[in-house]
Length: 483
Image (cartoon, rainbow, N blue to C red; front, side, top):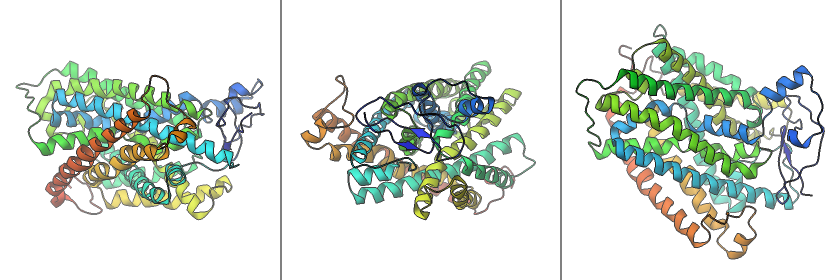
């Protein structure tokens, strides 16, 4: 029987056998407790406290991974995606939406294969992951070399830190739409303080209830915009002029590229699963669902408002005020707080490992995490104009960490026939193999390098230069009608 590694209340399959030994379940919320796949544990009628913790707290199933992936994949981007359609046009908008979704699925599959290879090799060496969360840079460093470990660590710190900061700024912006009695800086202080509470969440294994809320909030908001757009109908004299310039077009494609770039937390989500080998199928379902809540409202709102959206990067701002819109704004604030937790958690793990407390007691780790959360809160207050900066970071950094590095790393790891034959997770019969994977991966590398890194960076930088005069550190109310 293959060994079973346990991490922070998580149970994982071994690298060569899917069976697991029945082990009594302990449902305490301590980080170093042991929780097995419920299917592998003899049935015992739980008490009420155990039932609550098991239902709302402990989660390592495929469904939990799906909820985590959906919550991390789509959030504030559903509000800016219609704006991107007004920059690209209806036809090209749908095309790039589908293209980057497919590219995202494939590159996530590359990462999933590399994770399984890392686990298989490390477990053969006798490594124990009971209290250690495997991360992106560790996989790359072990399988490829120290140079890629350092590069991927840099890219992922910038990516996740940037996304986390944007969540606080977005919370403040949406709250200002609801109540302008407080300026955006004051709202950022409030939500930044609330976001510090995410240090209490041990691992991705404990995100069950929050990720479920994340899925429900974005689903409601997306379909509210569909219904509201259809009821509103087309504005008088509506025009659909896009694309009108190369700059706006590639700004739009960069936003779509960013939307399918949630791979920064793929490794951590897989590590929280009882059966990580199935994540490639979970992510396929994730993207399929994401398409159902990102494409319809983009089509409807661009049809209804056309070029008007060019002046509204937040799609909710073009819809009339109503109780339903207010609910959508509240839901998006809740989702952004959850997304902050999802993207800051890997940073917490990195910081714990730097301080050598990653395997320490839960309370020690919570205290150690505070400087990370406080720093991100400070950055959100310091740079309220971080949105335009983030588009540049997305086009440069995320192009590499999410798309290019996984493809190149896979080709390096499986460059020999022997390595491919001994792979921990071999491609299915109907999937590309050998030269087919080489051709596909290099095609993706070139595509993303040209469109994402090249034209995307140029368009984002051009947009930044136009807005630079509006920037101000610790701005009281950035982009408000009156500051």
